[in-house]
Image 1 (cartoon, rainbow, N blue to C red):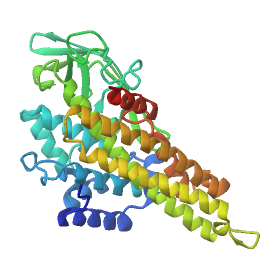
Image 2 (image 1 turned 45 degrees about the vertical axis):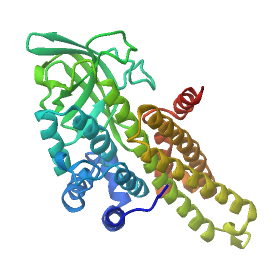
Image 3 (image 1 turned 180 degrees about the vertical axis):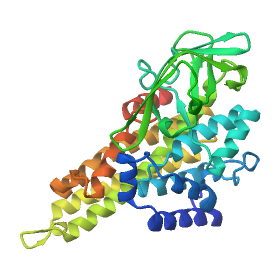
Length: 380
């Protein structure tokens, strides 16, 4: 299998890497995360207007540049390396994929806004009792004349505090754990519709998320995206795409963490010599390197399998997510230990990367969930 990037992909990676190295300041992004709006709108606009990355993985008919999963992987890895907090995966990968597959005038128009950098769209799919299972949907949607009435609760909806629109999963038919009967609705959260209660908060890795309570929220018939009760196949694909994207993001984070740790060990003196000269610590850094490379290979394989059939795609994604989860835990913990007490401070970047690597282990399905799913998919 040929893993060589073409000229356009090399240009994409090179241009984004240079942009982030010169214009994305970690201290400024942390300030925005902790005391500001939670992101940098000017950076998001530059992603769209100067780099075009928000549509890089989307077809031309949706306003994109005709890329695909490999372009998504390159972007996510570069963003992970720079610890970017802007919601690329939530909006340009997961929400954009759902809108593209749903189709229709409203979805197409919103896709164009995403590509242009003028819209943030998030997904609200998890519920208090659902855990790792998006198909466990208790939120209901009942038809009432020309309207839909939604009732239920969503939790940890990533990027919703920044979003103008939220894609909400709700059950129109079937039992709570059935994959059939799940529908997807577009909620204009910026207009604060009656019956919507939203609680925004900052997560441990300096991202923004929301819990949403829907109490008899009335939406127009046009709020239904795609066919009624048939949203699960698209949701399952979106979840795998999101898992593959954050696996690539984690690889970017780990490459940066490893590089910083090696550099620190070259500079930190103990007993009159750099601690990097101690063989036992060299072995630990080699182990870190091996974990990063295994994770990178698994993330690449998952990316290349995203357009395959559902079983092949799911198996590759779960293998990647499990491999990356193990690597993220090991690399993050080793990096903090090798940095000593400084590794957990706000002053060094390593502590911020460690928090993100910890959170990534649970997004789009935990490590344990994907180990179990991989086992189920590979059992004869």
